[in-house]
Structure formats: structure tokens, C-alpha cells
Length: 150
Image 1 (cartoon, rainbow, N blue to C red):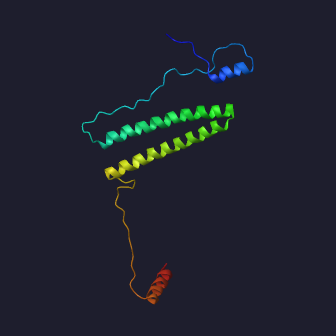
Image 2 (tube, rainbow, N blue to C red):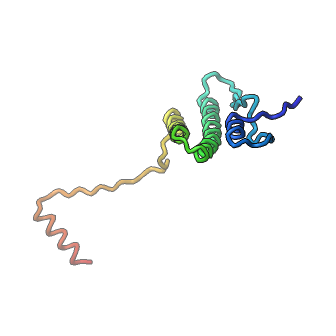
């Protein structure tokens, strides 16, 4: 059985404050909390870095996605209510979102470190170091000869 949606406290307060006639609720209040369930990856070993990485990565991505939605709602409420506390909550959500993004990047770095990988190219690099053995007079003479031949 679907229940008739109830008005929020804010809607009731505004209706009483402005002596508005009865109307349908504008905002639908959620009756049940929706949980985000991360998929548990089946693994053949109990100590699989890759499966743990994927599980954690998915959880962090879900957290980021839900925090973005919550931040958008909180920002809208802060604009409507013009409350200092609402703007403080928006600031805290922004910090949480930023931290979650950092956690996701750190997760990749930790996985690479565990697997012994680096972010650098796997091609060998060639370094040519020239070493001059002699006096400064010899070096100046060599540089002078090199510049005249060009």
C-alpha cells in the first residue's frame, strides 16, 4: 500500500506562517533509507589485492557519487534558507568530496606500490654524461676550437 506523501516540517511551517490553503506536499520525504551496496567480488584467494582494490574503488566511487547528489541538494537548501548553518554543511560536504577524491587517487598509488609498478615509462632511459679531465685552460681551448669549427 502506498502511503500518501507527508509534508515536511518546513512546508507545514510556511503554510501556517502565510495562512495558505491545504495543498499536496512539494517535497517527497523518503520513507526508507536507500543503502548503496557494493558488490563483493568473488575471489579464489582470501588475500587478493586486485579484488580488494576493485571493491574499495567501487565503494569510494559510490561515496563520491552520493556525496555529489547530497551536495547539490544541500547547496539548493542553503540558497533557499539563507542559513549560515546550511552553508557550513555545504562546506563540510565539499571537504568530504575532496577527501574522497584524494582517497581514490591514493588507492591507485598504493596498489601500484604493492604491485611494484611505477607511473614512469617502462622503456630504459639512456643518460649520456660527459666528463672532462684536464685544466681550465685546456677546457677553454677546447671550447674555443669547437666554436670556430661551427
